[in-house]
Amino acid sequence: MLVRDPVWGDIELPDAVKALLDTRGMQRLRRVRQLGLAYLVYPGAQHSRFEHSLGTAHAAGLIMAAIGRARDPWADAVQIAALLHDIAHAPFGHTFEDERPLLPRHDTQERMESALAGEIGASLHGMQAGPEALSVLLGGSGVPQWAHDVVSGPLDADLLDYLRRDAYMTGIRQQYDDRVLQTLELLDGRLGVRLERHGRLRPDARSEILQLFRMRYLLTERVYLHHTKIAAGAMLAKAVELAVEAGLEPSSLFRLGDDALLDLLAQGDYGEEVRELADSVACRRLAKRALVFDRRQVGQRRLEELYLRFERPGARREAEAAIAQAARGRSAQVVISCPPPPEFREMEVPTALPEGIFALDRPPGGDAEVDILAERYRDLWTIAVFAQEELLPQAATAAARLFNAE
Image 1 (cartoon, rainbow, N blue to C red):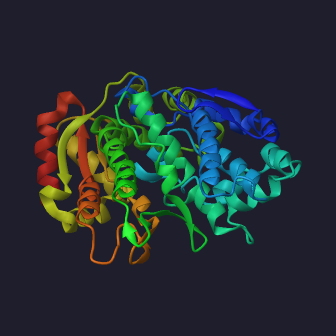
Image 2 (cartoon, rainbow, N blue to C red):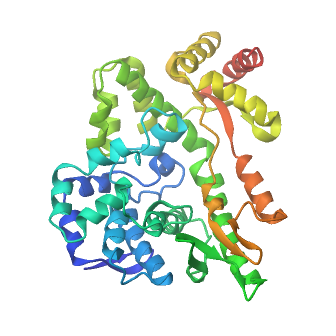
């Protein structure tokens, strides 16, 4: 089966996956944007998780070819699992999973089992490699470790697709070289990278891997954690949080696309504050930064203290209401973004060096360039108060008073 893709060109997939592509669950992913609310910053970021799923399946095939597993008995199962790796995503999924955690992550056992039941499960059980694909996705026994790693490891098919796709669709002129694939190898049964040859470090291979991770950092800085996207996400997540308290069933989100959720919140009977927040996001009337704490400014320890204080919805909403009241505004006009620290688990990829096999970020003697990149990534962690523009000066003063009292 051949599919034309703007990022990879012609994507060839096993013919058996056509039955999966035409299921309701897979087609729903056409209505779930890959980058959530980033289109409010980058108008071209309209690509969907459906396109990304196709690209991830293709990238899985490239990885298996690179490590000599293209004809392995598990190869079709791995490619099918890669196609389905995002099947459990809710609309604006990372907003509710990471930025203001309301839902369990899409790749948890419970979420995946639910998404893979029904029509998709029936299709899988009717395919030769379907049951094995389910085992890869659900962490079943007997699956080779490399098969898990290709689908959901430190350096996996998901990463190889979304870096290229997200950069292309946001207009960011960054790229990694296909030679990255030549560094991939099975190391003690795990998917890893080989940066040595004949007992010596390969500077060219190391440069290719570091460029991949620099691209990961750049997209995180400019796109995934862009302050406008974070503000919009905090507003939308607050609306969903309030709607759930007013009777919205969280499981119903998994049947919706992005725009359907926005419409439901703006038009549903979940209260005026929910409607105001959802309508503001839909019309791009977004809150601005009133107060920002970042790691370089206040240090890791202070951020951890603030996170522990405001990660709880009750404490966060109480603070939002207090700031809004002090600024003579409405609660819907103030939101707090309090995400957990960003992870850079890709740096944990097993790496063959002249001294042996180590995680890339923990080589013997250290690696200054890797350390600097990891430190810059940790510096992206921020906790912020956002307020509508008409409240901004008063909200900034009230927020500073409240936070400094913590």
